[in-house]
Length: 203
Image 1 (spheres, rainbow, N blue to C red):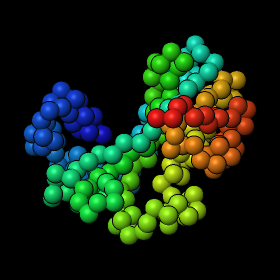
Image 2 (cartoon, helix red, strand yellow):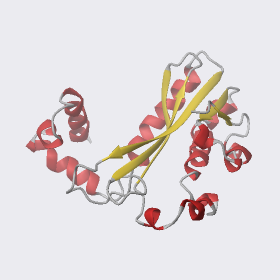
Image 3 (cartoon, rainbow, N blue to C red):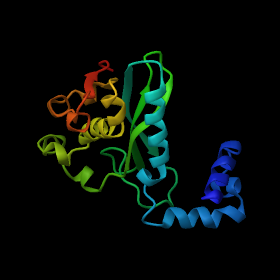
């Protein structure tokens, strides 16, 4: 783990350099071996960060925690040799990973850390079905389920904070405005103070 920490520090210092050049030959193999290990998942890597986020939420002066959810695409369309990527959209070209994260913060906007992060690549079937067919799928089979997952993981990871009397407001954009997101906010994970979903805006 020390080599991974050192590699991360080098990536920050040399953030404009290619990965191999930034981490140097002596660290490249050990970092590559770690990420090739099937037991190393994003949740495992981020577990310490999630725990620290909960502590910061508990220790901050505010009784109200805001959690902002959103999705971004990591577009690798110009990196032809990279595998295990999926479509960006309905076009035949384009390769990407998607990241949906939930960031906790104070009402004044001070970041308290991530409480959820999902990373995925779309399957080829994304291009094979129409928008109408996609809309008819159960929520558990839609990408839209990411909003509910984010709400639930917020409730799970902040449960001790909410049990202590604080409240959490989970906010999303217009894409989050679904019946399922509002009717299933994941309150089972926060019995003393449910994280409640709210629409932050229409953009």
